[in-house]
Length: 162
Image (tube, rainbow, N blue to C red; front, side, top):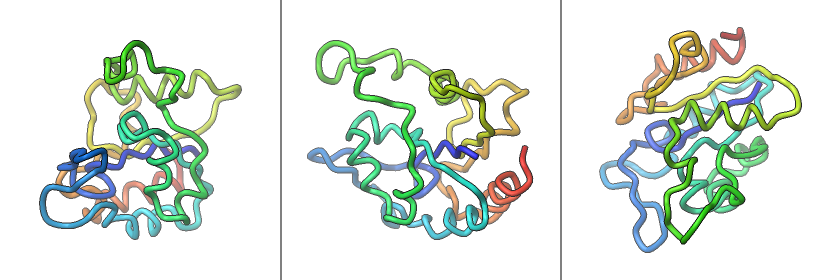
């Protein structure tokens, strides 16, 4: 199963900003503080991770991936953002920037050679069609995976499908 993984609002609160090119959490806690909850949720599931976080766009795939602990990094197979998507001057908006998270995921899936089962965990539910909502684990932006109900929904869907 592919798991499209957002960082901000999922693995830590969503109040993350770039300061001198580095992500900084503005508020209590620390970056990736809820990774243990993700590890608990995916335990026993056959999961491959696709980064659906804006970190891949702003920091690059390699830096975004390397921000994860090794145990998660080993599961990463791609990202919805790819550097070849960049158009125009540095910092200029691209079509990817204008898409909803759902549209970014659909574009990634369209580039795959064969269909597959997938889920997304994200704090942004804008643009998700009703019929695809079972594939979204919608996290509270302030609580992310610190919310046990969110962890439980993710665990159930990974183990039993949508």
